[in-house]
Length: 243
Image (cartoon, rainbow, N blue to C red):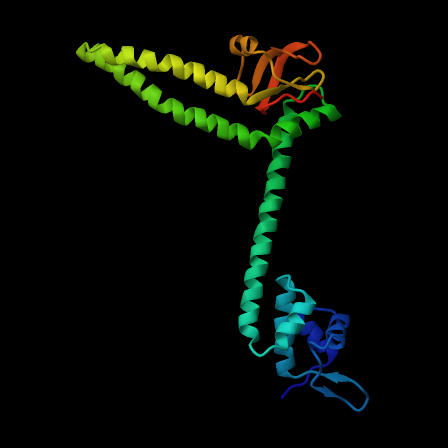
């Protein structure tokens, strides 16, 4: 049966000699034989054990955990549990890093639209990005509630044109007016605006909000913080927070 020196087993497992010696001092990979000169010799079983240790270390399992499970009576089942736990940890880390990557990508895209870059601009973008998920949810609610109204609108128009039945259209109007009032009030209550001039977060009065020009992300308003009138960035927020 072949025997391996410390250097040979280190090379076969892709680690340093110092690593093999460290595992020996920790008692998780002791050589099966020592020569008269004190040289460590490892067997095939030792090599297999070393490969298992390296595999577990690559999977992120700590040395203490590896030592305990290899000393147990049923290491296979324990390794399975540890690997499951480590997998969950790594999946969580991947999600967290992906969230950060998405945030960085969003900031980079937003920066391209900023004409006069400043440190405050990053703050504005970060504030808007933090609330982007809530804004998407708000738009989703408005879309879902608006679809039935739109379907009823077109059905009532078609019935009026094709069959001369006008009563459904009257009913649609009676429903659409209160819905329009509700959806406008609902949206107004859940949005605030970031002034590009003073970088304050404010909520305009309802009248200005209702009649102002706007895009999906901007609205032309007068900032209540500095008085500047222009397009302001729309974001989610129940209350204004002046900057």
